[in-house]
Length: 333
Ligand code: DAH
Image 1 (cartoon, helix red, strand yellow):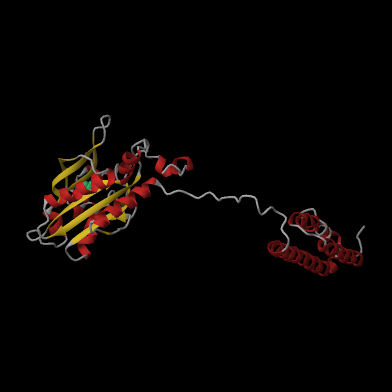
Image 2 (spheres, protein in one colour):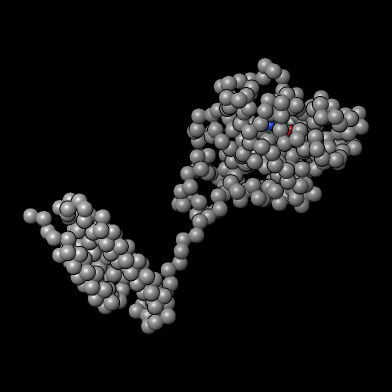
């Protein structure tokens, strides 16, 4: 049997009054939530009337529906404003907690050791007068390879080794492109480092990661020689690893430097000599390519892997620890 709308309307008024009565006495948030659920919950006193809509004669449905919606809104607003006033009272009124108990210290995060080492490297070079440059992570073949004198058939250009994007761009495989970008737009002399992320198609294991960090260095000027390169890099290694650190240079090859050398440091009896960076005198082809007169100016460059340095410095045995964000690891530095 259909209930009369008048009766239902009257019931809504009763619900309204009962709610007002009840909420007035509520002094804490938990009780407030109980009242909210009782009236506005899915099976609450208000919802019950929504399910009665179907029984109401069609012509009277809109009127009843409006009143019901109004009621729902009114109660919702009342709960919200009551909640507000409970919150602000709590801040000024008598406290129901013990002020003499020790506070709860929020857990702070930790700096990643990679960033600690990166900052240390930057600081060491800043003290030697280097400024910091950055470049895009998405490069083109010109900056990543060609301008650096890398021949077209070089293995590092292989699809197996470099992440190419569909539009022909690529993720830079080293920070060396920043050398070229800097020479293009800075006046001489140049003395910069370029820290940043690099990418290669490597399968992750204890010593490889497809994403890693390098710090590049570049010095160009008149009369820059191999002895400047050696002096700078030996000073750097001793600052980072300690004053007694033994250093040696081994001849090597990079397309963008001639001659090229790798620098090793003597670690300990177990590990012996370990390579920490590549370096060399900037190849005249590279200078000419950016319009720097290679008869007049010379320079040196270097590049190092930050993960490797951090692993050596802190004796970390797996490169993947750097990216896991495990607090048990991060809290140790
Ligand atoms: N770009 C080289 C690499 O990723 C590292 C490198 C070697 C950078 C020698 C240099 C350099 O600037 O002179 O393996």
